[in-house]
Each structure stands twice: as C-alpha cells, then as structure tokens.
Amino acid sequence: MPFEIPNLPKLIKRVRGDLTPASNVGALRRSDGEVISRAHAGAVSGLYGHQDYIADQILPDKCSEETLLRQAVLRLPNSGRRPATAAQGPLVCEGADAAPIDVGTLWKTRDGRQYTVKVAGAINGNKATVTIAAVDAGVLGNLDEGTELSSVSPIQGVSEKAVVGAGGVGGGTDIESIESVRARVVRTYRVVPRGGKEDDYVTWALEVPGITRAWCVRNFLGPGTVGVYVMRDGDVDPFPSEAQCEVVAAYIEAQRPTCPEIYVMAPKNRPVPMTIDLTPDTTETRAAVQAALDELFRAEADLGVTVIRSHLTAAISGAPGESDHKLISPADNIQCAENELPTPGVITWQ
Image (cartoon, one colour):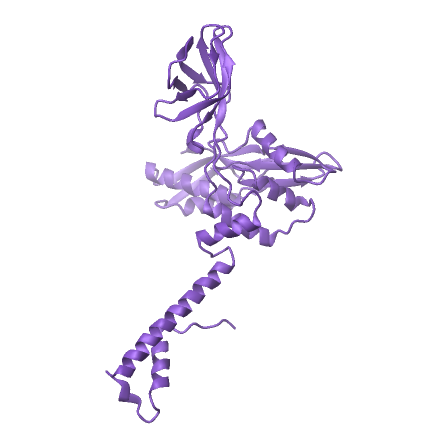
C-alpha cells in the first residue's frame, strides 16, 4: 500500500490537534499556538517534499539531470554520457606542384565554421586531397560533398579556395541528449550483461557516439558469426556509411568474446511510398500528415517489421486539420525483409 504524504492543511490540523486540549478546541484561534502550528506544519511539509524528491533520485527514470549524469558515470562505460565528436572528411585543394599543406592549417566555410588539416598532403598534378576535421565538435560540422572552403591564412603555392571531396565531411555528432542517456541507464537495469548474448552486442553498439539504434542477428552467416545492424538517426543520412560501421565493429571487437566473427552494417532502406487523397488538400494539412507519418515510423519502424496499413490510415486521420482521406497505396500491409528498415517514402497527393 503506497505511503500517503499529508498535504499542508492536514499537517496544520494535525499539529493544532497536538497543541489544543480536547476540551478546548477553539482556544488556539488567533493565538501564538495557532502561529506555531502553521509554522511547524510548513516545515514538516517541506521535509515531506524533500523526501519525495529524494525518492525520485533513487532510480534513473525520474531523477534529475544532475543525478542521472552521476548514475551514468557509474553504470555506463567510457565515463557515461557520449561526448560530441568532430566531423572529418576529405578536402580537395589546387595549386602548384610540390606545394605542401601542413597539419594544423585552418580552412573555413562561408558562414565561419572552421576546419583544421589532420592528415597533410602536397600538391601533385595541380591537386591534393587532405583530411580535415571540424574545430568544433557536433553535427554542424558536417558538410556535403562539393562545399567550398577558403584558407584562413594564405598558403604559399596553394589556391585560396578548396572543395569538400567525395563522401563529404561527416561523422560529427552532438553530445548525447539527456533522453538518450536516461534510456541507456534504464536499459542497464533491464538488460543484464550475459557474456556475449544478443543484447550485449546491442549494448556495445549503442555505446559508440552517434549510434541511436542497433539490432543483433545470431548465426548471421552460420554458426560462429554475429551480425549487427546500426542506425545514426541524428545524421542527415541516418543509414551509416561503411567507414562508420567499421568504427562500431572496432569498438565491439574490443568488448566481445573471442569466438564469434562479427559483421556490422546498416539496414537496407525500405522506403514506403504512399498515394493519398486528402481532404482538405492544403499545404498545412499535407505538412501535418507528413509529420504524423514521420512520427509513426519513428515509433514503429523496426528491422524486418510489417508495416501495418491500418496504422498508416490512423496516423493520417490523427493529423491536425484532416477531415477525410483515402489511402490509395499501399493497398495492403508491407512485409520488410529481415535486413530491411521501413522509412517514409515519397507521398503522391491526389
């Protein structure tokens, strides 16, 4: 039976009863005793409130951010909260042959984001590709292929302008959100390490900065093999690249038992295109429907899941401003393959 915390009026009544003789109930009205009873009850109420606060700090599902981060240090590896990481990638420079581009050389975008050369190079055939990294860690450091950068200080023999090379500058992640930290700490209570079972591989993958979802497949290519699918929902492209998967694989290699051979990869993207006859068909209603479907896929998308058509129609019906609709396609449920992850596809409006 839960303990009932008395509210302030009940506490005042209780203290008043302790101070007032049973034969003289009204004697303390407007007296020093009444003042004492209210002051004492207020103090006791504060103590009850503090105890209630302390009770919430014991477990991670309701504790404060400060307490959660302390628990994360104790229960999660690598000092708990995943730090922000700096984006890295190739930069293609032009200039005179043999002109060097040294480590530490600074480049910047038009909006002022700065990047430093991590792997030096020299011009050969009027071009050179060097590796740069964002000075400031976080997703804002990610750049698309072809983005133009300029040198912060002149480099002898090297053009002032350069462009981001193939694959872009990527891998930058923000510091882990409090909601993600809370979910991982709670998971340590629910999922106990078991010496290399499936849940352990998921746990190890989620410890890598940027990884937000993971799945483990036993006997991936037969006995003695393990497959791990990972996602990076904080990136522009949530399906990780081969290089990003290699980072996860290297981390898991240092944690796993010696026997299994591990394969880390991104799920196969399975877009679900839709054709919708919407009423009223306005820009605002379309945006609301798109947002509702995005939220549905975030909540229900899973590896190899069946996309339930009735769930799509329910999400559309719940969008603000929608009064009626017909979901023309898909006409039935969609079964994803074991390695497929459904995502919202292109919507055709009719």
